[in-house]
Image 1 (tube, rainbow, N blue to C red):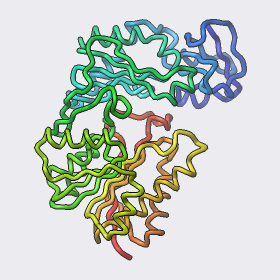
Image 2: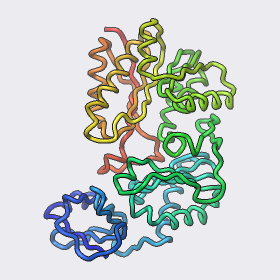
Image 3: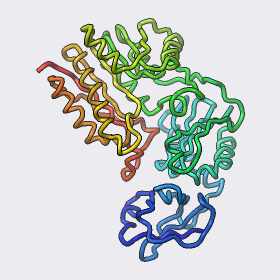
Image 4: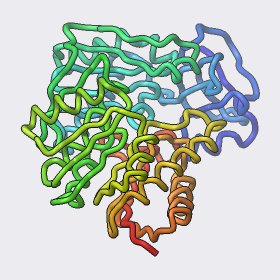
Length: 389
């Protein structure tokens, strides 16, 4: 087995709870084994810190997840997957939820999402990829699923020297599954939707939106399959959903029909352009939701991303009626809470409005975060009331 020895004092972060060992923190690597296999990690003074999968092609050399007396057996995977699922069930979740959330569930590089009796896995590390068969067997033995599908974000896998992949791993996987969220029916397109089919992390925030939409006109930007739109439809006067994807807009219409909503319009188009057209026409709304995709997937793109966030937030602030509500969100972990808050302050200043903060929220509890892992605490969700100066 590989033995990884850290440089002096580099163990402090690990002892505090972090599980990532970066290549530049390592003094030397002893022994040889297969890339992606287990490695033991030791401090400079030879104290054992744990075991994890090694990948010489990644900046993250080792992802720790085992103690010295443990091995990466199927029994361990089953135990951890079951424990993760039991926690979600204890929260009252049943139809659709994130069952395993990587480091936060002591299985770094593995995500498992449940959509009724279909399970979607995303693997983003070499070590976990080599354990795919064990992971699939564990899901089958624990939950007897109808089907298991693999979808992986190309950017994450590329960093690990892996190819993007989408395939059925077990059973039958339909093109779509109807789930229930916040009492609403939603058709989730497993194979063609975003991420693993649907953005499960916003479920509680979508429900929270309802308190601001009663009898109001609502604009849902970057609507995707309509999660926010549908929750607004439960009590809003009128909802307008905007997305650049025709497929997403068709999904919005499909979901509105499933729930019998007729108080919704849709626009297929670039949100930036649509907002500018509304400004030119003098169209205003009582509530605007901004839930864009991640504008950046690397540190080098943060400045450009912040300009994009600022642009849409200024436009939205100007399109709100007096006392209107702006929901502004970011799912990129590279945009820190401090950066996002500063962007909102700068946007309000340039829009010449007063922005009163009503709520600050994050991801749903089936997406728990580790205090020492910025990547697991990624979602920012602000509710602001906008007034003229």
